[in-house]
Length: 497
Image 1 (tube, one colour):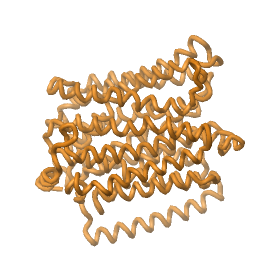
Image 2 (cartoon, rainbow, N blue to C red):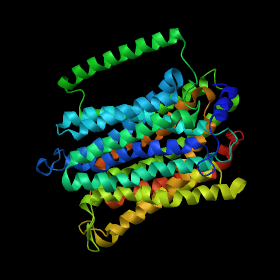
Image 3 (cartoon, rainbow, N blue to C red):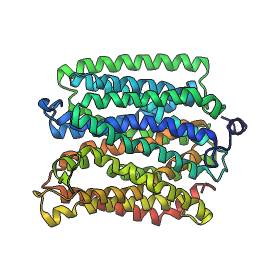
Image 4 (spheres, rainbow, N blue to C red):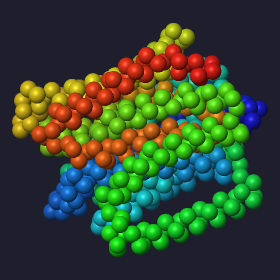
């Protein structure tokens, strides 16, 4: 998309009305709120649904397998963003991608709401994976489109948008988690479907009035010949994949273990190929190539951060269920409720960080230094959680306040890295790859969870000190290295701050 086209989009968006931000920010805030309500509500109870016994309403899947499935599922959810980004950039634009994605997510949750087998679970997961890939990166890209390139409100706007994400993430485990854990898992999944329906309704009814032309332009459209070729290749690829799966499963070549290894390999390979394609593209300018080089260490830092943060739905969820004293201060705590802590702290402190970045202005830390702070706090959150085992051993139940403290520390890191990363991605993205670069940002989460699927098997109550210590220490060391290199990285950004 040409610069003049971007300016015309921004000009068409109502520029005031939501706490001094464009009116479209509220609509995107509300849409993402309901999408995240549906996703985090489902995620809060999914791992328990998988490994709880059939007599308790679960599927009775082996506990270690269930934790690995959760990591693989999370990886594929974010990995699918490359499909959504490509379709938005090349075929139908970000607005339609958000709509189609919401439909698929809702259908996936409806399937989960119907009592069934593990096969039904995997079909619903496939729908949610594809739907999230269409919706999540593209709704964030639209947020970037409603601000002009030099608008100083952009970082604060992303922080407000990020608070909307986490408001949905806070309420969902409390409501869906209580309904699913106390009464019936499928009732919880059904409520998640209703949440996605509400998000779609808000988006459809208000997008024209509040977004103007934002999200309607295709950044790098396919020519008719390219479109025919692309659809032919996609069709052949899908057919070949189906044949390979049909042959590999009966022969024993495609097992759960080999699938985990494959996703782990793709989690590293796909972003690497993306960086190479964008860097070598003739549509990428010299300045944009320099910014891509600056983006690589930020991407690596993001992978390390999400490898820790995303274990809230796997290792820490299991820790809450098996290792934590759930009868505390006269209250029985549902293990699903702990997943509300992360978004709760973000709701409380995101406005503080948004205010802080605006207040500091040009004196605020550079983007690489904010990322290094994120890694430091992520590492500390894992070092904190190993202390109970050090003092009390691996057999005693842990005071839930240790988990609360760990979640709080990682949130401080998240607010230094995640909303800043969203904003930096829109600034550093080559014009011809705008939506796809946002997909690349979410691939850092996919890579992290693909790695997690390989390492969660090493966690046991007996090894938890080594497990948390090694991962937390690695994050702190990488944060220190990134801080030392921040000046050089900033130079490659060519004016982006």
